[in-house]
Length: 384
Image 1 (cartoon, rainbow, N blue to C red):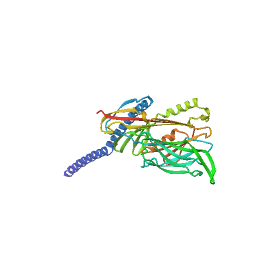
Image 2 (cartoon, rainbow, N blue to C red):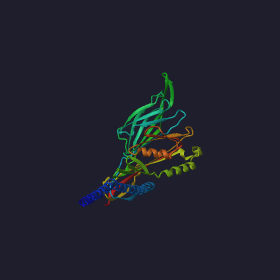
Image 3 (cartoon, one colour):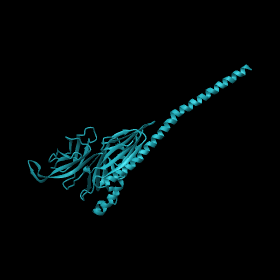
Image 4 (cartoon, one colour):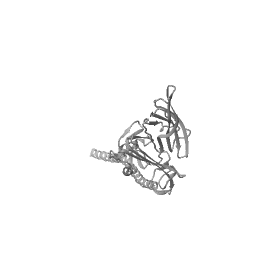
């Protein structure tokens, strides 16, 4: 009888141990699985909320750019945690193309070194050019309203490529236009065993645009790591565990076909003899620049974002291929944290795109090029 009572006591102890073990296991699973899952869900909700609010910001940017004068627009953005900031750097877009064709010969060139740490040096490679032509470049620092002229050379009488490092006195940042100018001889004579030119006439034969986009960015943390949402150049890019995706594609893509339609109406039909608007390249680049004492703030808050159109640095470029050359090529280089996302986007929407290097895309069979550059000043104010 006493033996049975001991067995009953042991069973009670084992029951208590089993209950405690079960509770401990449940608590551990909650700590290691449920809470991180709930934290991740909250982070996903927070990120999606910012993405949706950036869509309204994009509408405001498009609205002020489309208006004349120094127009402005206010957008409120609410977050429950995280950090919101404005950067004047963002990703860098470099566009370049030839502006010249002649029976005397073609002109083609490439640039490199515009995405490294040295903002006062790049390489110019003139691979195809007529004989007896010499070149120099004129750099317009549009954000400073300054210019700089640098001689390139020409190796008269030789057809070897010109590969030259260009060193500037001012940083190539923000918004810059570089014109490649040739000095073409109007008189050619033969003496001293070779051909020589004289009485040179200047012509712009190539152009390079450099635009630093600037960005508005939101950062938050989750159990899986840091999360980031970036608004730049009419697009929204989100990052999760080092994986980036374009959540809002630039709305200026609609204008691609509108410009093709207008060009077809007003320009000779031979420019669109292929019957395909893919032979037109329309690109729009928008800069965002901080315009307030506050450039970042953290925590739960409602922010007032003031978007103002800055017409001091707006530019528009149209390039049409001539009858002789039939078509031209446009090159696009992209540098920065989101460069891969932007390259994939441009490859997806434009026809006849080739990747000629890690950072360079070449748009071939181009008949009509339209480039738009705009700038918006962004003010940030914390309301509470």
